[in-house]
Length: 450
Ligand code: FAD
Image (cartoon, rainbow, N blue to C red; front, side, top):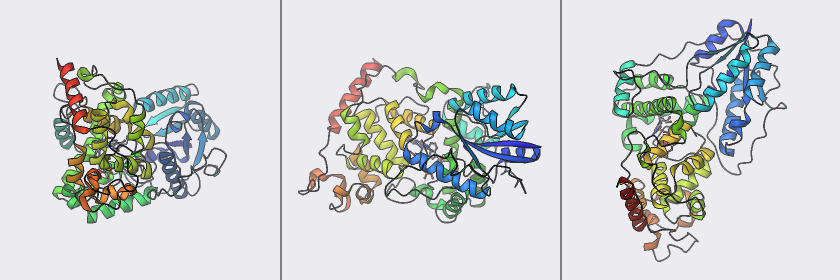
């Protein structure tokens, strides 16, 4: 008989337990649903990347992918009815919206005696699985990571062998296929499972050993740049963990820890779905913040007058990705120098990031704001100048994204106010004085702490 495989954040054919489950039923209809609730808030970069990833998936399916648009509860039920499928297979979604949506789809299917079958998750270990000695979720990272390592991860799933795909073949470029946004001269990395594998194998071969030292350097290409591939499931972390076992080194250990952070934040959001918006630690909810206005727009558009902050925010718009160190610096600047609440920054990031992921993003922001798990204490305020000088020591990162500073040599790019011709090419003056705003933030913190 025929079943449906509804693709969501698992746009690959290798290491795919839900595909194995579907193939065991017989023929498979491969379906993707453009859900207005998710498509609407996405920025052009994420939309474009998704469309290209779907196009690559469709090619791997021999053109069988069916793309529909609409409320999944209607669309999935209709697709299942069309091919007479008793079962719709999915990789379980762990996010708050995805869980509600899947429950609604499950109900819609049950009305017609059809079943939603969840197999696997986008994580090494399914959110909600790892518990402490008292059967409760962990609230800090280190003990979670110990338990995560002790639990161990499954090996990559078997190859499904020959699958008969029964799509109608009019999905991609058909009536429901959204037009690709015009991204101007923005260049995205190649999308799709094959490109992600190549990037991973290359990283494993040449870069993972040096990852420990290189990962903090935004001016170098020292990280994997696989977050978007993990977000869309072009690669599964199981595949990466198996690869790391082949290439043991201190860098590989460090990289495994980063994958554990990804699992941890998904686990936290699973247990506390409210923390996509609300403070994980409510102690800081009483801080007074400014409404996002002109200064917020200057931050978002990379016009704050602080070079590393502006380079980061322009990188966000230029390529839909920002180096982790710089994400922390720009986030700290918004929260502590401009006194804008973290949720506004989180939403801005989600709009632009090609790897935009609710759990990692909102908890990354909460960490910076001092309200998350393992949070850096609120009083630790990033200095955007010394951070820039330390992690982009030659100013190369700043010059790459801020053309108005390209005439400044070396690390002078971080302090245009110290150069005679610093503002010769239209770079904006600093919109706030960091030392002053740091004091304001700390006074406010002292008020709340009482
Ligand atoms: P690598 O250094 O190569 O790391 C490998 C993988 O580990 C990443 O692809 C990612 O899946 C995972 N990882 C690494 N660091 C973290 C981390 N701190 N938390 C969770 N997972 C991590 N990551 C996202 O995937 N999506 C987001 O929306 C996101 N928003 C963030 C917002 C803020 C304010 C901060 C501080 C961090 C955010 N991160 C987010 C985490 C991190 O910045 C990115 O995962 C990383 O920069 C992606 O680049 P990479 O693939 O080269 O990472």
